[in-house]
Length: 79
Image (cartoon, rainbow, N blue to C red):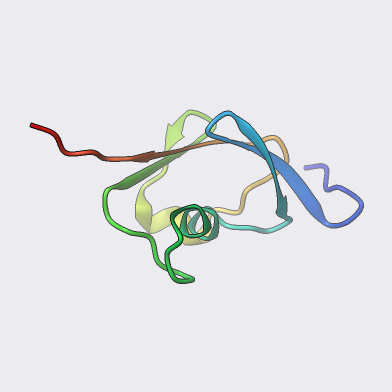
């Protein structure tokens, strides 16, 4: 992992580059993207890192690294 001089890493989130503080977890990123209170994520969201779906229970322990590709998907009901 190459950390930028200011302690940040660059990851791709839904195809867009985003700088994060080194050590940011998947749970923190998803929470920030969804506007949820710290440490929570609303239901109906799935996440994959480097093309591998990550079970929600693993989000708090998965620290994102330089160059990771993150996809965050929201389920939509229709009819």
